[in-house]
Length: 283
View 1 (tube, one colour):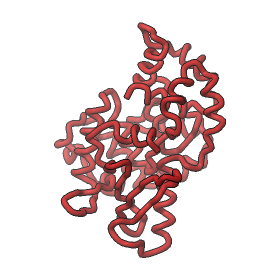
View 2 (cartoon, rainbow, N blue to C red):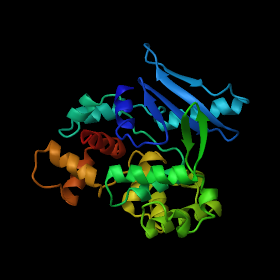
View 3 (tube, rainbow, N blue to C red):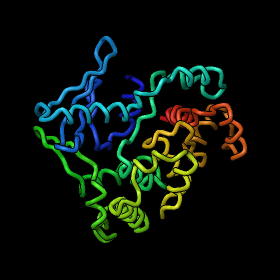
């Protein structure tokens, strides 16, 4: 759990959950209510989940919370084959030692994943977090407990009703506002959904995402990796990935695309995990 908490706590401007004393508190939409949960790992390395606002009103709420957490932490995936591969790889062997136990932390909601991908385009991570916080606090919902608010990401149904002028207070470009509203409208019309993408193979899902205005190969693979959970997703143009490889190889120049393709041959079937561990080297 330590490696995952380290990743989740990499930016103080995170607004979707709070980390304190090796535990996580966040609000989850169960489809019935917004529920506030607390996650902690005990001495037996078991994840303990508590409802801290009130007890669930229906069994469905418990099922949805468990599903969300398993997806958030990719708990259904056996990492043994990845570690076997990584320990024999000259680039991955150090990261998997340093961050053993790290999982690809997901973004289970498709709209949130797409928005996060768009917000992060061509800006640094710190500014992306600032934009996300502004967007969530302006359009999202929240649960209040004590003097704290716990946020739920804005729904595509709400954002689909907006115009770029409604997003003018958020310091993103007009183009990004248009992209996010356009994605919300596609989802609201039923032309884009997580369920439909999950039924496709990797290449078809990638092509479907790239057809959307504002979604290029980097954003598509980011979403394929962190939301749709394709282990072969590989954001090859990612600057962070390039910098991590440059650092690990003690090189003065970033890898070329041909070099990246060659490196990724060793990660076949696990490109998403290789990328995630290499990203972690930079923090």
